[in-house]
Length: 226
Length: 213
View (tube, each protein chain N blue to C red):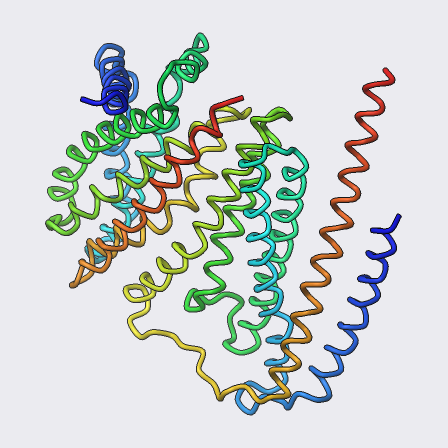
């Protein structure tokens, strides 16, 4: 019960942070001189992307714990983190696509390394679920999922390097999203928004984990009573 | 020869001998890659540049590797041979290394047919491109031997392997295409070497967890 009241506190904290972040984004941070109003999505898009990385990292960390301790509770935690990461990854693709449409006029730009990276990661982590759900539940599934999650974090920097390298022969002129240095108020809005995203991811992670654990307990009960 | 190395050699030799006797995988890979090249001739517009052909060559090589790797664990799956191997008193990673070497040899044979055919049908293949192909084949076999062991544990294995392996092989394609079309291929070859080192180490360390129950 204690953890649930803590979760409720964090939910309210999340709501509060988002309210502050929205205020900062739209009323305090100045409108970007170059891109205008469409630049505001930066405060949403980049925090979402960073949160997705954090989720994938958490999933890999829990996977490592599973492989070392063989404690099955880490399996569910790793899976939930990867699931949240995939959700935030999909949101990154969607918000990035909207931003690309607003500022470059196309829904997709292969010149944006980060977006391409997310597309690769999104595909890779979607296959995680396909692999996981086609293996019978048990120790082997836990370990294969864990190894997969670890491969994912290794793939992130390697893919990023690859995409940087590829842009040399696909786009001869290196594309850079250059702009003026961020003003202090912009940076604060960005950080608050990021904090809100991390809190949101954490709340979603806890809620999903809670649901999954209840599910499992219920099934265990049913099996033991049958 | 130390115990580990002789285990690896024995396992790799077992796969090669099995293939020499049954001839199930290698002829299919060679025919497949040749058929792909013919398909490319019709897929490419008449005035397409050589660079486009090099790009497609890489698609052909990756798909051929996929074809070979899909069948990589078939002999082990029949009659529970994998259980026997896992129970054998050797390091489990030796199983992965033996399988990687066998898959690499198969792929090199397929490459050795595909490259002359490609240079006759489309465009000449330079030394840097060949080095890139060897390095990328190494990488895809290292990762693929592990990924196909993962897929072998699952239902619908034939479908799963490409889903796992294609996102993982994108860096290899970048390095490979870069080494074929770029004027300074050394960066791409270094990158391919880095990929091989990172993922071979990871697969080597992780394999035990994939096959043990």
